[in-house]
Image (cartoon, rainbow, N blue to C red; front, side, top):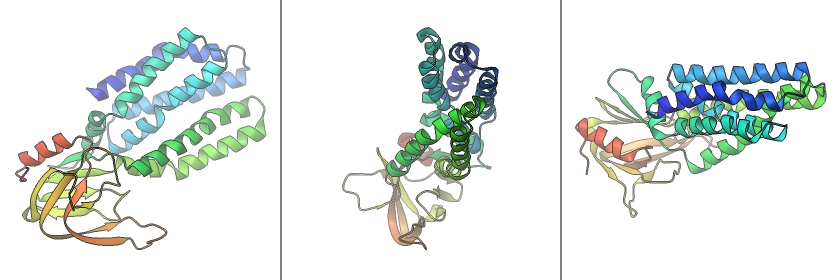
Length: 286
């Protein structure tokens, strides 16, 4: 349902939200209007295409691209758009952004890329990595939107610098943002997999015969924290024998850090659904 709400709201961004952009550009040159028009339609088309073909890659495109509509609304507000026209743009854009960041929508997009008999359950963002992603997006978005506009208006120096920053962001930052979309707990017939390129250097696999059980983690748990850390409820996975995980490479630990454990914590976006799905697959849940 969340995915369909996002699709419908994003369609309204183009149907009723364009008046705000037209009002903001009414007194601008033809070159500026063309640059803004091409940029806005490209953004809208990229996100609607991502909504049309759900996948992990589409999830990243939608979550990076849809909030740009709110940045466009801020720019339009400072350049002459009326309050009514801004509301027609901002309201559906905000609804689309809220919907695309819900756990339900993430689950639908991630599961669409699954293979065979597996259930992919997205993991919540680690607080540090998620906060850094938001800060970098806030810096990158104005450069992407304003760079071509400055160039079209004749300010080649400022426009060129902003455009180069925007291109650098696409090359350097988008892959890092995509890694946040590729964090899953995967339940397969052979057991359980933690696929987390942000926290782990390699995929953690636990066979069915190694799984002693799963439960909501208690405050005094001694299990190893593989959540990032992330906020909210965590699930504790208990193993009947020692399993090994290797944390992601860092400048301080260029070869990663291996730990041996009989229990570990993960943070599915919807812990209750994760436990129900595990129980349905025969994993002991308490």
